[in-house]
Image 1 (tube, helix red, strand yellow):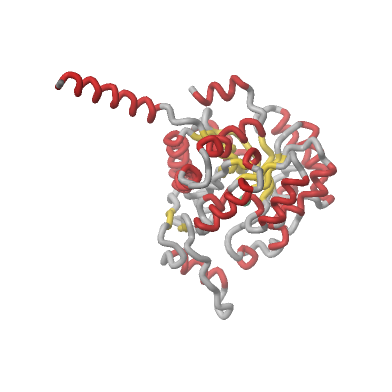
Image 2: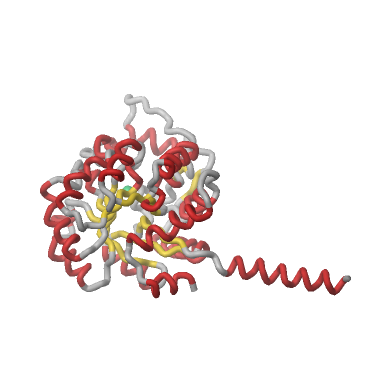
Length: 339
Ligand SMILES: [Zn+2]
């Protein structure tokens, strides 16, 4: 009897070990390679999630309101704190990617993305973050972008931060960039939805709430029917506009981005459940929007895995299958990610 018990115990231990070792792969469509200070002086805090968005008395500068609330964790009971240095940020992020078996579409300035790629060649899929003012600022013109993509080194054009500049994807000044991406068949990830709370009053003077609406994408989508586009942050909180745009443009995908960990959880679940209920489960991509808080990736993944309204196959679609299809990964690439 004792031997039988021992045998069962050993089999159980081997089984549990095998389960842990074979964590299914996840594709994070929205990871950032940033400097530690890019979201403000480190250590910075964020709510994962925020419980509420506080309030602001305009007699004091808005920045003061935010910094005070973040420092004292007034808007959250689940704060995350950012690492102090660039290398700590990179090392801790890669450790989380390994822990959860995540492959990250990682955007940033090309030199920084290259540094991350060198540190974790298997985990990092290179993407270029881009603002319209980068044309002047760092010379990311149509031609130089084209070179980055044509060489095969960079796979995704995004995150496009046009909303922060008050520019819609459908504005004519963006046209040559979209034509280039369509010609080269490079997927485009565009920010549609929330930036930091009240970001207009923290320097992004031209950011506008109306550009949360995914309907801003329409003319660009119609002009470039072969372009693969995903709306990052799923146009939160303009749900009806997002659903209408998904319905009208079957090639469009969304990623969950910051709403997967930072907005009040009940609201995130409501938003995600509505998109699934409306029938768009095959076009929802997981994206952590990790900026300088590596732990946010795990929180976002756990939120998907714990969503009571998702079936196991819907979770796999969101965490992996939809992205593999959208990115047109080959059978071999998918196989390798499962090894
Ligand atoms: Zn974004």
